[in-house]
Every structure is written in C-alpha cells, then in structure tokens.
Length: 591
Ligand code: ADP
Image (tube, helix red, strand yellow):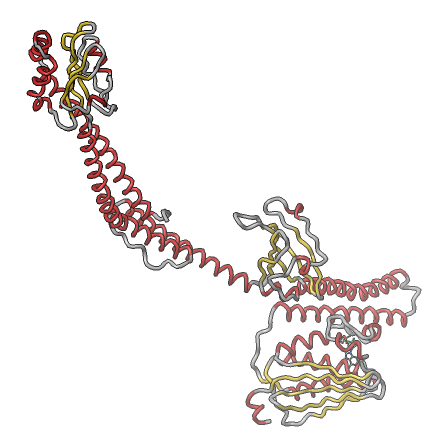
C-alpha cells in the first residue's frame, strides 16, 4: 500500500504531524509543570518570610495552646498559601513527626515523613521539590531543638497540575487528530501535484519502452520535475532519431542481405540458425526453418572455431553440393551484450567460373595441340628435305612440299578460325540491319563448292524457291556459316552421295536446311558437336582439313543474328543441319 510515492508522501506528512504534536505536547506539559512548581515556591516564599517565621516562633514559645494558634495563623493565610482541597497545611510535632493539626484532617492518616519534613526535623527549612514525585511540599521548623518544637508545612497533592496536564494532553490529541486529518487531505492534494507529472513521465517511459514515442510528456512547471520531464523529452527525441537511423541502416542491410548474389547463413554458438538469405537457400537447396541446425546445412563440414580465433580470420572451403561448386568463407561472429556470438558462412557460387576456367584450360590445350600437329609435320618433312634433298626423287620431293603446303594451309585456316572466334567473343559485332538474301548466298556457296564436291563424288542440289524471304544481318558472316555447313556436308559424305540445300518459312522465321547422305553423327556425339574443337572422327576431320571450330563459329554467328542452328542426324544415313533466322519484317508479311 505504501509502495506508491503518493502514499509515502501522505505517510511522511502524518508522521511529521504526529512528531510535531508529540514534541509540542512534551514541551507544554514540561512548561506547565515548571510553572506550577515555580508558582508554588513563590507563593511559599511570599508567606514564609523571616518575619512570619519569627511570628510562628513567638507563638510556639509563648502561647498557651501553640498548636491552635499556629493553626489559626496559618488558616488566616490560607488564601495566600493557596490552600484548597488539593493543598493543605499541617503542624507536626518536631520530635516524632506526628500530626497535630492542619487544614485537612485526612492528612493525619495519609501524611508521610517526606524528605522536606525530615530536613525540617533537623532544624532546617525543607523546600526541595522533586519534579517526578506525586506531591509538592515545604516544611519549616519552628523552634526545633531536639525533641521540642513544631514543624509547619504545606503539602500539595499535584492533583490540579495532573488534571491540567491531562486536559492539555486531551486538547493536544484532539488537535493532533484534526491536524492529521487536515494533513492527510492537504498531503493528498500536494502529493498529487508532485506525483501527477511523475506518473505521466512513467506512462511515457512505458510507452517508449513498448516502441510508441507518441507526443512528448507535458511540462507542468519549471521545478526539478519539470526539468526532468524536459530532459526526458529531449532524450526520447534523440533516442527516436537514433532508432530511425538504425532502422534505416537495418533496412538497407536487409535489402542488401536479401538481394545479394552471395548466400549468407549465420549460426549461434549452439549451431542454431540465426540468419539466412534467399540466395543461400537456393545455393544449398534447403528449406530453412527456425529449427535448422549447422549439421543439417553442412553435414560433412566441420569447422574448428580455434582455426579462426583471432579477429578478422576466416576459413575458405570449396564445397560441392548438388553439382554446384561453392566457395564458402567461414568467419567468427563476435558476441556483444546478450548476443552469444557464433559463426557466419558466406557462400559464393563458383560453378560458372570453374567451368569457364576449365573450358579456357581445355581451349588452350586444344589450340596448342592443333598447332603442334601441323608444325611437327612441317618440321619433319622440312628436315628430311634438308638432310636428304639429293637422295629423294623429284616426285617424292613435290609430294613432301605438297604436305608442307597443306599443313601450312591448315594452320592458316586454324588461326583464321581462332581469330574469328576471338572477334566474336571479345569484339562484339555491330548488329547490322542490312538485307541479306540467303537464297543468293546458298547458291553462290553451292557453286563455289562444286569442284570440291565433284572431287568427292558428291552432287549438290539447290532447292530454293525464288520468293524465299530475306533476312537481316551481316552478309559475309552468314555466308561463312553456310559455307561451313555445306563444306561439312560434302566433307563427311561418301562417293555417290548428295547434298541438298532447301528452305521453308513460317511464323516469321526463315529456315535453311542442308541435308546430306553421308556418314551421319552418332547420337551420343550430337549434343557436343557445337563445342570448340569437338570432332566425331578426329582423323577424318584432320584428313579433310577440318579445324573442329566450324560449327562453333556457326552457332555464335547465328545466335548473334537472333536465330538457332540445329542438327538432326542418323548414323550411316545422313545429316541435316538447319539454320533458322528471323525474316525481314517486310518479307515476313509477304510470306
Ligand atoms: P570440322 O572442322 O572438324 O568439320 P566442325 O565444327 O565443322 O569441325 O564440325 C564438328 C564435327 O562434327 C566434325 O568434326 C564432324 O565430326 C562432325 N560433323 C559436322 N558436320 C557433319 C556432317 N554433315 N556429317 C557428319 N559429321 C559432321
């Protein structure tokens, strides 16, 4: 109940009130007692003057009935002595202290020999007053000498003082009760003025703790609480700004985290997942849940934390998962405050890079091999000619020179093809929008291949309709493609075979097919024949002067022109290579 500041303040006020009243009461009772004692003593001093005492002594010495006369004299002074029902005078025998006479006969039974009476019995005036005793008294010796003489005294029962003190205490208690009521009421209102701003401030702080900044707390006065409220408002403002900044940063990081090309996964010290991004799920092929653990994500990858104990240290691991090659960087997460730390893995998919790298290595190896073969031949024949020129007959010499010439020619073609590929790879061709007449090209190619075909015992047919639509692009490049395809159809044909160049068009695509009746291509080789340097029959290709680059170049050029090139073949029966290119718009509608 007294936990609230409000009640504490009320309690403090009540305690102060009671304490003040208790102190005031004590002082008052004390003062009244002192006043009473002083008053009693001054009354006694005024009456029991030396003259009065000598008068008493005279009576004791001369009177017939000294007790009655002494009593009569004291009675005459009873007003000055303040004799009433609580205060009495008495006359005692100095010898034994027995009661002789007095204003109140009851005293004969109740009077005790007080210290003052004992003092008087020794001949001295007894006027010591004990504050705490339950009476006041004075005792005066009258001619006390051994057993003779009297003691005259006044005894006050203090009843009047006690009554007065009780009245005083009663008044004070009433005043205190009333004061406590007023204090409680006042303190309620006063406490409200203090606690209301504090309660508002507490509400505001609670709202802020729940993330609701709302309106700033109202400043009621320029006192300490007012300054506290103002400082609190300023602090809340700074906090809100900082939270906004952090939120902005978090949102930027989150966007980066979600859309970055690398995968990121973080685990706590116990191996439970803390963060992951969509790319990581994609690369690892895992549906992450909040219960995913490290051992589920990387079952066969144990990373020792001691390996990366120092700041900035990370471990790099190549990891093969579902046919993809991932480079994973493991870095320790430093724990701060309540975060216990853990490990973060950044995943980088290097499959493509690795493939390109392998392809580059293979390409370099192929190029070296392709160049070395003709060079070895040229060198071998040249050496033989130099060493044994005179021993070789002229027919053999010219056959040797023919080989050297052919090998040099093959190297020239190889270098030319390589240059063409390099150009296609690095110096992207400018897209040309010039009209190209495929029919015309095909007929020219067929004509230029005529002699070679006849040599091979192959016939070339051109079955191309006159209204064949034109295409757009670079004439020379497209001619190179058709040349490669027709020359393959002748090269890989057999005596008595034929090559047919035909065409058809639909859906705004123009198709040019070159069909031969040659050797055909085995099914398993079909997917690879567009690869650089890939040959089905290496010996035959070399023998026919092939470089293994013709179809690779053809595909690059056709795809650049927005078309496709496909091969359909049956081993032993023949092959059809089809090039499909987008028709020129005007021609397409005409088709
Ligand atoms: P090449 O210079 O060896 O002819 P290409 O890239 O033009 O290189 O062709 C790749 C391989 O595909 C050839 O080596 C050959 O084995 C095969 N090939 C291409 N065209 C035909 C075809 N019309 N008939 C049979 N095989 C073919």
